Length: 321
Image (cartoon, rainbow, N blue to C red; front, side):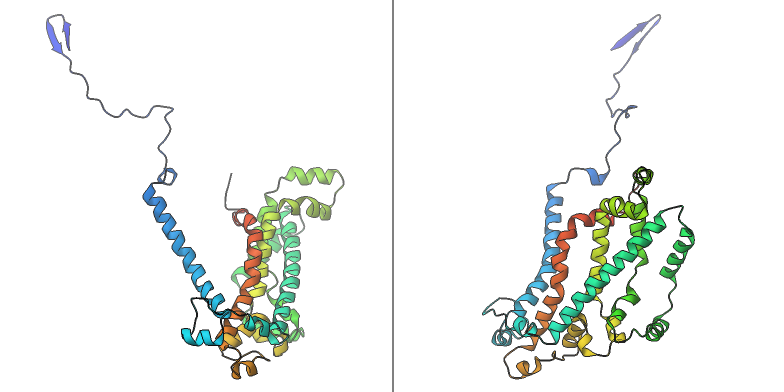
């Protein structure tokens, strides 16, 4: 292509085609994690998730199958049983026939129910009071609670306090020393502060007090976080064993976790099962596995019911906007 001008002929070559700069309204490039996944990536994720599930379910499978196996099957397998054969519930029948394990299970259930109710009541009330900006001394109480997360009295002063209050060899010693978690209170407080103030203000204009606002407005809107915190407290009480080991001396008051430690680590059979194990009617390994299954059942039963609230409750305060 040539251009004719006065006195000169110039040749204009076409410009090489290249990438155009993004326009004013052009969309910015998407980050890598928003791109469409490739087949190799999807296959890798599937393999990783499958291996993770197998890593969790395989030991559980061995524990359950061993607890349901006879003494002969366990002897032939040389210990833990992988392939089920001649299944029997004799270990569970002996454990739940009214001996030490049955009593320990009842103790653990009672402590978990009462302790969770007490802890949730105090935590919800504390979080609601601290979430009200104009409440009396809320800033000082908040600072005191935060200080307890970083500074503790220690084991010996705590034990002396429990002993001076006369709580040793009582079930209150399994609840009161660890009844409150400051972290759980802060999570509840953050969720309560995120509730629209227009709702509480309109209820207060209609004549509702703080108790009614908490019970009929705040708590129904906070079911997700309350379900998660309840699960945290319940699992904590059910799995606790340290308080019982230092505050209780009566074996009849021991919870299930302490009986499991006595059975698995110390190799001491529960009261009432020693003769059955010595007589060859029951395998000690099957009893150990059965106690483990009993300890896992409540958590496995409760988890699906709060699973739908777990994601929302755990993200409380973590997302802005």
